[in-house]
Image (cartoon, rainbow, N blue to C red):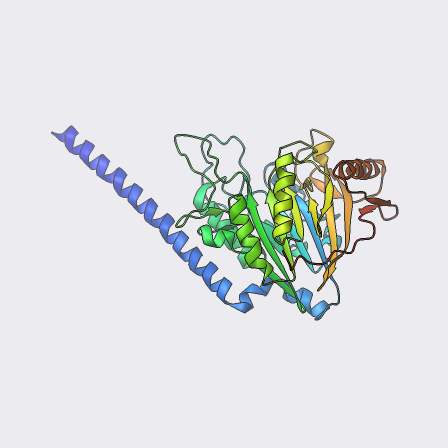
Length: 394
């Protein structure tokens, strides 16, 4: 009888613990969704991240935007930040990043002290919360979290990531407390110009273990990332097109370690441009791909890595920074700056490596039907005779 009582007590304890856990997660989601709703309805909150940059040029005739590839601040990068200082990965690039009105990147890790690795995934990235302050100091205004590592450490860590970014005044796009919030655009206003960002990932509906089949995809009442669904994306682009001067679409897509986009990617990118997107910024392959100009839009299929510890190949040590100048009428200049990552530290230094990279990207772009000019000192690739009018008729 005692054994049976003990077994019953053990079962009751187990289910009580489980119910408490579920309630805590639900409370966290509710609190975060409340914050997100307040932020989206409060103009002051929307403008937090751009306040300092508006003072530099209250009503700019032109706006400068920079975009970089994958930013991963865990694993070896995290160890280097612990041993050499939190500034270490940013030392050779932060001056340039701070020179833009808007700086954008893909945050390829969770930021938290909590959470447990999702079973079966094999690769998990979680950075210390102190990195958010350095991301802000280095110039980042907005980061995509629509990727295959934002949810590595489950719900608590995912919610923490968004909260730590919010506390530092860094906007996040492509993830939220539910599907509506994950799909919500971020609108950055600088002077009299509005730039709208949307972000989605092809990896949202994948799970790694039948023991815990957790997908990263947000649902009506579940936090997560925005899924790559063509019809959904087209709907969001058309709605945002009516509200801003320029639409920027961030896509976590494609084939890892491939230098070329698939035919499917190109076809869908054309649909997004035709719907009203002005600029598509691609991530996920961890290597660079070409740039294509199509019907008044620019498609950068993959910017490669930016801060990462994939030192095992030349291709994964290479990345691109995309520099855009635009005004109310559209994009007036687009440049690709080649960079090399040495020991998790990106560098724009002009040498044979960056020159070789620029030549490769020029060839990749030529294969896509777009000819780029190669300039020296400073080293960059540019689109000749660029005169793109915003897709307001899309």
